[in-house]
Length: 259
Image (cartoon, rainbow, N blue to C red; front, side, top):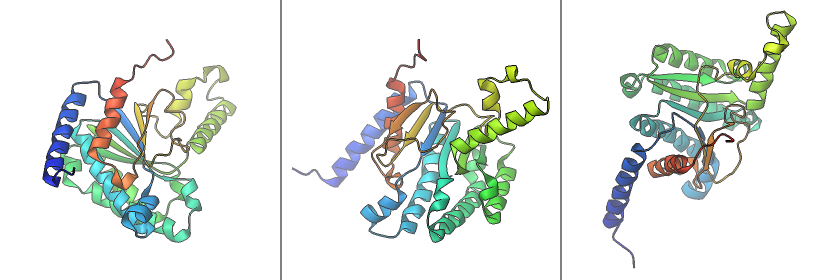
């Protein structure tokens, strides 16, 4: 027997409210990082359209997801927007993604809610690999929000964790060679302080969409003690209820840190 849509929507809305209330009474993650996967498959399987349409929907979802996290008072949100490996895609797709990112950065930097909530926007990764127009958009977003600290929206772009760690090791080696540091002084904290994320707390919860169960070269050093959650939904189809379920799963886990 099928229930009328209005009944289903009402029941769903009530469940969403109850779940929101439940998680707000528990320990909230301070830093949520997201691997946003499935734009292209969503375009083909759900929209029956082109890859670009999937990426457009994925970009819209980022802004929607940021709204949810702000409403839930999560102070640090990090998204994996474009990996170093993504440069291996067809030039037309890469160019489209760069243009999409450029426009999104300007739009978000000018959005009233960003300034109302005092959200700092930061982009980290290999900026040298990015087009000049994207670099300009990054500088613009930074200049418009650099004085904020209530919330932090971090975008990993042209990013690869192995490359990040390699860069940190090279910089530490350079300092040792130049007698700026002793080998015996190198610690885990030393490595952390030389990463792109040196002034950010490590993620409490790392969430990946699309049903794939892997990390894909994302924050490998930083997620050593993160809780991992894999959602079987493509990124453009990610819903508020999916975020709530991920946070509830995080709250249900007991973190012993080896004890």
